[in-house]
Length: 130
Image (cartoon, rainbow, N blue to C red):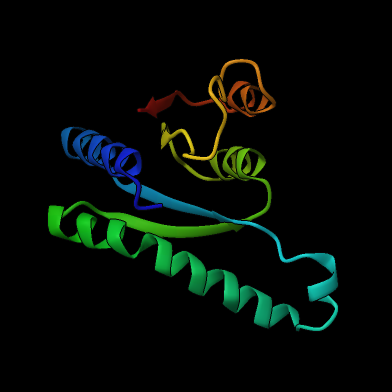
């Protein structure tokens, strides 16, 4: 998202990928289009919109990864953030999740909220970067 925390999380992921000769799965989760809007716009147009928005958000991270010379693959998911991350982790070959607490999240976001449920569902370590 371009926040200082997200930049730190990306730096951490780059360091891990470099040390482990790994690849980064760069994920952006987009909010679904409301039901009313979806009635007037084709499914393909909605997919194109989500891809375009994700590209905008991921552009600085992609540049940083290219500059660092780290292999990566960008992805976009649509839906609730926690459930989308958990689903992506389950369906991919990722062996770790590195992320930042969202700037709009309340204090204790991962310590007792609904988000803790998705963290418990994933089978890989989760590193939360401040």
